Image 1 (cartoon, rainbow, N blue to C red):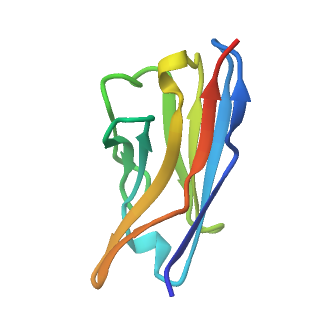
Image 2 (image 1 turned 90 degrees about the vertical axis):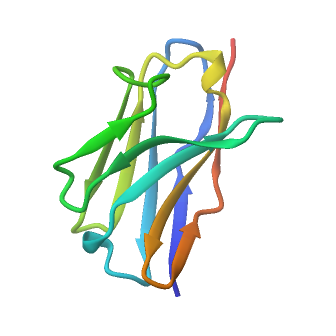
Length: 116
């Protein structure tokens, strides 16, 4: 079955960096676009970044442009989110997501807290 497992979250000071990873299994990873979403307390889950199958096309939410970078390694079935210049408003649970022919799948999420 499809599984997405995120890792790399934690507590970081404002201005710091983190790299999130999402390792996939159970489907043809290299044939599917991947997405990172986040959900802050009391708010809706929103898309942060998307990446095409080869990594040649990426899109970002305006709030993270220039600070976050999405990438993928199709040999490792893993998608990454490099987060730099983190702000307190980036605090959220971060999820990876994919859409396959038979459904939409989410990881369990990883908590990112930006605080001094």
